[in-house]
Image (cartoon, rainbow, N blue to C red; front, side, top):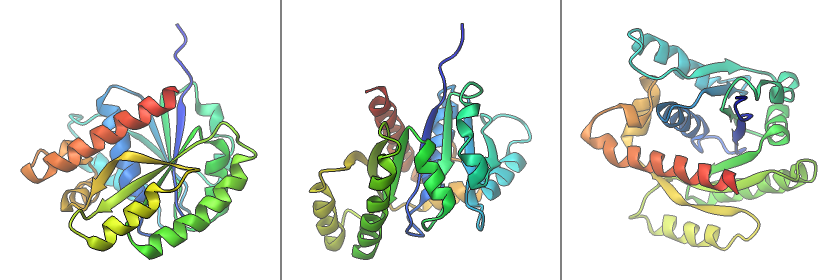
Length: 225
């Protein structure tokens, strides 16, 4: 039986520090743990944070105990042809990098689902609004694209964070996901060790790990619609 074509998920926002690579790698790891064949594409020509994460993962996974996550780097001209890889994987995740680059445009053009992580600060929200205006133009050429906003690094005790959250909840054109990722050191620890928070096995990683599992489930359910 021929397996279904891969779902393509792009994680992108023009604002640096929104946590795109962290979200991408953690989603990829969780999908791999669920038994899916996953390809992660690092489209950031400058930092290539996901490629650095992948190299670290190879080092800590010499025994092969962790599930394999295929990772590669593709420039924009190749990224636009990523649909040719649909029959080789079940999920393809694109780390869209920062700023509005040709790579970001290409990611929006080929994706089935666009996940936009945003921190709860006024500066981050303003930058995201500008990014979403560009996304709206891209959606005219990719009318099947689903777009969701992910609150990342949420500080539940912050009054400003709650105010910004209320603002985001009023957006009508783009769905705000129910799942939110909190502000946890475990996310940084996971990235620096080439792992996902679901793999750390520490007490401090339990809550962020549960958040990543919930995020993965919510996205998968949305993509079925």
